[in-house]
Length: 254
Image (tube, rainbow, N blue to C red; front, side):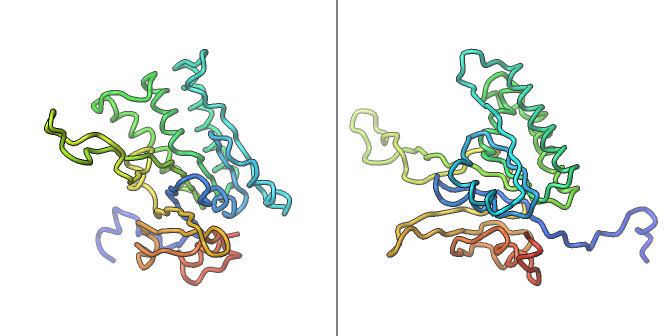
């Protein structure tokens, strides 16, 4: 043994059957359904009230799913920074309690709103000078990383936003191109989330010959680099898990 063993513990070789996933995609591309097919018990932390019409079939089939709903209404007349802090603290409390209670999957829907909630709680508004973000960023990173101490999966869903840029012909009067949508979209949420997760998945829905076709594009994939930049037909969390960690079965991810 190296003398390092006198000072440091050896790396843990145990492979946990779980993942930490950043999911993105337009509305109706299968993100919620994918999260609900994760290992049970599931805690679904919902800020956008998007479960109705999707969750019922899983509950009727006997799947163990719990829901924490948050009335996140920053546009309401009685909204305040104190309310945002109360909501943030409740969200964190529920998240940590679920981990301690043995949740196998936790879904944030949407992380875009969770990040907004943390900013309102910190600053009283969603935007502040970048120099003021260090403390908030560290707090947020610590919350996300807490799941890594448990045998649990975390799936955070980010909404998409249109990107804007100078496009079209140059104006004769200003000498500049006009500002307009570029036709491309970007994820909306905590910018450093991709550093924290194990896997990035982008969900798409396109017209098919006999109905819509669902596709999952894999970006970063720390657990199985062979999947990076590959696209797969829409599938369940359990089926994707068997690709993520070869040798596992769907039962391992149920």
